[in-house]
Amino acid sequence: MKRMSGADAFMLGMETSRVYMHTFKIAIIDPSTDPDGWSFEKYARDIESRVHLVPLFRWKYAPAPLGLGHPYWVEDPDFNLAYHLRRVACPSPGDHKALCQFMSQVYAYKLDRDRPLWMQWVVEGLEGGKVALVMIVHHAYVDGVGAGWMLKQFYRPLPADHLKHIPAWNPEPYPSWLRRFATSLRDLPGFMFSNLPRVVSGLRQKRALERSIRLSGKPAHPNFTQMHKTPINVVLSAGRTFVCESIPFSRLQAVSKHFKVTINDVFVACSAGAVRHLLLSKNFDANQRPLIAGTPFAGERPEGMEGLGNFASADFCWLRSDIADPLKRLLATQEANDAMKEHMAEVKAAGADINALMNILPNWAINLTRYLIKKKQGAIGFFGNVGLSNVPGPREPLFLDKWKVENWFSTGMIMDGTALNMTLWSYAGKANLCILTDPAVLADGWVLFNYFVAELEALEALVDHNCMPAETVA
Image 1: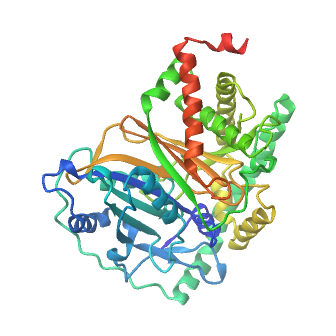
Image 2: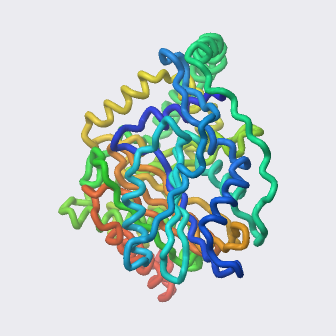
């Protein structure tokens, strides 16, 4: 029995029948690297031989009685791997767009809290004999860095046979209500006293930092309370729109190198341009002000917690969708991202501990937060107008047994208000863009993907003409 952290409990508490707090992990498998080809039965045996490497896959949720502290993770004595693996065929014609349409439906699926909070659809019948391993994993288990660690437990840099030794597993009995109540009651005072001083100190430091920014004459740092409602900020429906596709990573690198900006600057600037086109297509004046983007940052993970728990932090930056010129937007994005990095460093130096605050946040406060955001009807989103994430993934291809992982995609969640998530995950020379949104915002996700590519092409054209920032800005 293991108690969740405040951040883990928050991920559970924000979930509703329309707000799904799970992440997508998608591996595209090329079975041609194995002389024996593809076999679902072999794959299921292989997963069975590896599931002990990620123990949380056999953990399920157990509430803390009377809301005394955060819920628990407990071993599921009735764990059945076959329940979590679903074998399906890709809808005709079996191309990538058909797969994305299938995945849009799969994402709109609330996980059963009476079982471990993950599912995987093994999608056969793809073009070229490929197989897609489409997994949803609840964010309460782990953040992006932890998910990267989990990836390494299943996939290896060299082809190899599956593990033949499966250690015996003897799960503990499901803890009774009385045991959970007694444990929660016993731990509550120590839990509060270990976190409360850090919260008080953190809030003081945060106020001092804000006062210092004010006195320096700098503009206030953006946060979700400053966002303005746009057509992409809605209360979520039950459905989802999801698309993902690869762009050669070298294309982003060329723009980054020429204009002396980061890969993340290029990603955020192209995302801002894509969102601008989307807003204009909805007859919204995108010129009136910048939007606010929420971005996760990796936090420090305690030893022994490599593949478990949420330790990431988040901050906000101005999304310069109000600037029409691609290069001016790129330079303004660089400035906004630099300001966000500086702010994150100041927050860290000040000791403002958001995780400590999360730890003492009672369940009713999480429920109240969710209610107030929904009541605003999209005018406030916990991660601003748009959620953006840029994750550097493996540079070399990975293997599952002798099957090559040809590609890898990953994305997070959307929430009431923040109804658009754009995630860039690099893998083996590819920049893999994932777009997750609500059908009410965008029924065809390829429209936004094409806007993103058009923005990248506009910057590439400037590189080809050897344009430099001073020439264009002038």
